[in-house]
Amino acid sequence: MKISRRKLIVLGGSALASSTLSMPSIASGKKIKVGALRFASHSASFIAKERGYFKQAGLDVEFEFFQAAQPMAIAIASGDIDYAVTAISGGLISLAEKGAVKVIGGALSEESGIDGQKFLVSDKAYQAGVRSPKDLNGKKYAVTQSGSSFHYMGSKMATAENIKLSFVPLHKVGAIIGALKSGQVDAWSIVPHIAKPLSRSGSVHIIGNVADYLPNYQITTVFTSANKAKNERSLTKNFLASFSKGIDDYASTMIDRKNGDAGVNEMVDLIHKYVYTSLPREKAAPSIINGTMRLSNGASLNITSIKDQLDWFKSEGLVKKSINIDMLVDQSYVKIIS
Image (cartoon, rainbow, N blue to C red):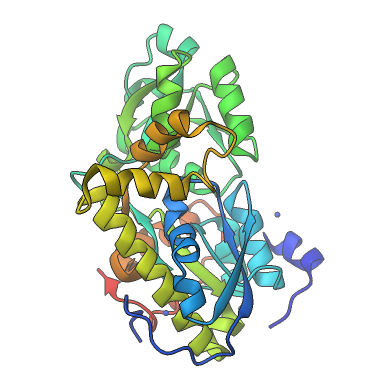
């Protein structure tokens, strides 16, 4: 299904993937574009490219970088990019309802025992007495867009604490950081490699963990166009297999530390080519290491978490109530966890 970019902007405004590569069933050097954010949580894609896993699968990968989830969903549906990793958003769900995109796997997730996403507050709010999420009643909470993962996290926390938040869409992560530092907004939630350095600046404070409210949260997913998921299965399987090898390397090095400090340092050098590129390596390294979180083994997908997210979007009136999980997810590609 081909949809024009103009129409997409209006609309936007599932066989197991083995970690061992199969023989490429597509032409060698097939050029594909992969959407990503310059976050450590996207490291599996970077590893797969830098260590030749994509190339071994016959894929010539070019990255296209974004600053929010919703534009990435639009780019997948319009055919501007082929595969992407990002959070579930209202725009993505709406495009899935239109038959344009499909979630095919999982990526970043919250896991007990691994430091995860944080709730942050401005120093202005902190000095006014906001020391935990329950103190945020009536405060301004930053999101990229209405219906973003930030909106979902904030809303679920607010419901659990029986408080009300005022959600402020600022479109880009950089804009949110600036507004939080200056006290124009009071709170936000973000991955640790961004949260921890911000808190060390003194202008922002960590007041809680997202996992306390959303244990086993499937934060990001792998997705593609509905057409590729249905009609280009060999290409899609090879992409997922390569991506999964990147996940394996990341987990064994950064979480299990099987190669010790030397392995971590080598991995930091690789990731630094894509993340915190404007900083010298010695300044970027602590943040990259602080960003270590679980990436779903074999790109497996926590379907329970995805269903909870879908139900929340419906309850907020952000997507049609008629959409179901099979419209959103192709469950045939990876292991499904419930």
